Image 1 (cartoon, one colour):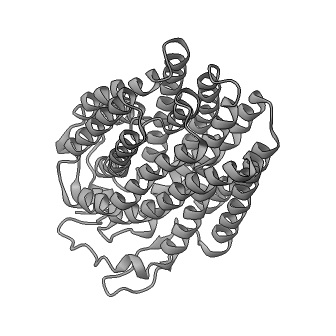
Image 2: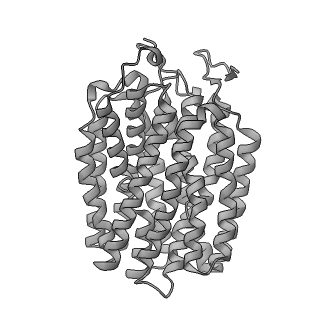
Image 3: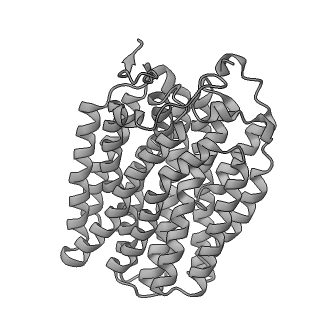
Length: 417
């Protein structure tokens, strides 16, 4: 079968079901991390280093689980049930952390949430590719991300309002509610519409997946992974640190300020994701991705200089631009570099594990810098790392749109312009 040519019509029912799944899953997969940092530092009087450490534990769990999760998603047909298992884990962990916010309870809860965070995006992306096929994948990913960002806006408003009007711990209760709704939404997707061969990046039925070592010979993919790893090392700690900075002396108002930060960024991410979905095929991936890399160092510098809470909120517009582009293009670029290999989700998992390690270390390192030198020093450090990520991507990562994956004999990738 030639999946792009013979792909059956995509039903509106499945498209709608994917929309709602992405909307509801938006903040379930990471357990409202920035809000957790505020809850621990302002309501539970944790220091920044301890809060950063438990976030790091969650990130490390994600790192360790991503590659096995990718291999699992490639291998199984029960992807919908895998999503249900993942959201159930997040719900239970969130309720446990809200009931007993001690260090070890939160650390274990974050570890389980981190494992689920490794599984859920891969499963949703595989289902999307399996339903729409390669030709419609860029637009579907853009649509996924737009609905996801819309869900983030809604969840942030609910969490901020719950934290302000009820109690800060109520921010975690929203996660359990959204997880239950995700379990309903995923089973609205017609399982028979998911082509599991296409979902793992194969070009035709019955194809034998490439050897795993193929990923280590794929130099464009390796350079891309290096660039995004440093990008996330620079990016991951910025919003939690901004939230902690906002909470100093204003613990009761901090949930609303954090909600404002999240909502501002997410509202910008929606049109950015739609732009990527509609223009990535026409304009190419690299020009769009360069914009995402370029705004991050500027954001770090502005955070270092900002003292007014509403200035910090406004700076989140830059996060909306960068993350909106990144969130959609990451899946598209990895699909480009692994076309025809049958290892799409494994490659997603491995690349995600690498940048997840960067993100996990970011919280720990930045938290220690704050404890020793203050918030401004941490933001300057992160901005310098972001410049390094921009340089690697600009110089070493080629345009992926017209690349063909390695042959079974392991030949280098070649452009087909």
